Every structure is written in structure tokens, then in C-alpha cells.
Length: 135
Image: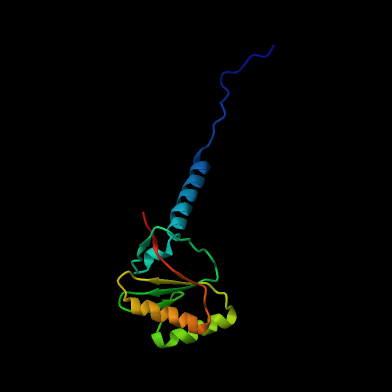
């Protein structure tokens, strides 16, 4: 008959590695969520719309028009005179390239029409107007 020895140590579960993993995951998700909304770092206040479809295409051209009339094409500011040549170059690469025009809600309508006209002259006809999702 075996007699149990009361001096044996009970197994201990070391939680330190699991806590380290949880902290690493927490840091990863905190950093990853800061890159989710690039529109928040742009200084454009878009108008709201209750209908519409969100576009998530990788080859999309995004034209931002600021309230003071500056134009930013795919993240870089360009002069108004160079807009047509830039759009023609994009149209030569792919005439079906979708273009989203996001104008500040305070920008003059004439400026948005000029950008749309430049897209038409370049041969880019797949246009969309960027808005914020309304309530």
C-alpha cells in the first residue's frame, strides 16, 4: 500500500508568459486601430448623405478639394494646372479607374465642377462624390 507523502509540492501554473502575450496583443490592437481611418487626418469636412455606397477599391484615385481651393490627388498636393496631365496619365494606365472627388463642404461648387470637367477631359468617367455617412 502506498502512503502519500504530504511534503510533495503541488504543480504551479506560471501566468507570467500568458500575461505578456495579452499585453502584446493589447498593444498590437491599440496601434492597429490608429491606422484605420485616414480620412480623420485630412483637413476636409465632408458633407453628409443618407444614401450611397462605400467604395473600397485599391486602384481608386482620390481627389481632395480643400475649402481654400487646394487640390490633393492621391495624397500629394498638385497645382491646378497639372491636374489634367496627372489625370490623363492615370487614364492611359487604366481608363476604368474609379475617381472619388471629396470636396470640403465649404468649397465653391465651381471648383468641384472644374475637377469633374478635368476628369471628363482626361477620359475618366467612373466618378463618385465622397460624403460622410449621415444619420
